[in-house]
Every structure is written in structure tokens, then in C-alpha cells.
Image (cartoon, rainbow, N blue to C red):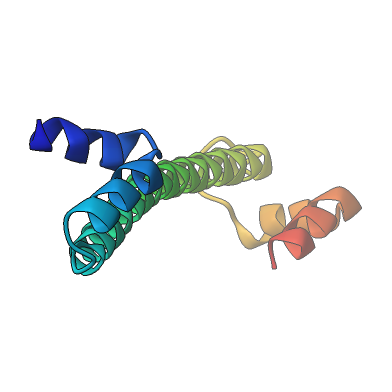
Length: 120
């Protein structure tokens, strides 16, 4: 019966009615025990709930970091593909090399200069 009473005290929120009966009819010193017990249980429940929220937040932050790394990798691949296309376009002789004349011709185009300026 005592365990059931403590279960009700803990989870029903009806602890004042149970505790006031014990304090009045048994001994007023039980107030200290019940106050410590209720404070401890409430503290533990708050800590557990906080830990669950923190865990979920950390998992979400981890997913965000993974997404950021994936986007950065995709951006790097896209940049490499664009650079390859640029040099393929510049290699008008088809020998696999870009001569100074071909590079000069390429850099004379305003669109290419603007694109390179955007890269920094």
C-alpha cells in the first residue's frame, strides 16, 4: 500500500492530499522526507527530458553538418567540371594543352573574365 501511495504521489500530482494526511495523522517530520523525495523525482524527470531534447538537437546538428559537407563536395565537383569545360573550350588546337595564345583568346572574352572574377 505504501508503494502504491508513492506511485500516486509521484505521477498523479495528487501528492498534497496524501502527504497532508500522513503529516497530520502520523508525524509532521514526514514533510521533510516527502519534500526531498518530490524534489528529487521532479529534478530527475526534468533532467531526463532535457537530456532527450539535447540528444535530439545534437542528432539534428549532426545531420546539418553532413548536409553541409555533402553540399560543399558537390560544389567542389561542379567547380572542377566547370574548370575542365573552360579549358576544353580554350584548347582550340585539340592537343590537350592550352597555349598562351589560346589562353589570351579565352581571357579576352568578358564572360570568362566575369566568371573568373567571381571565383576570386
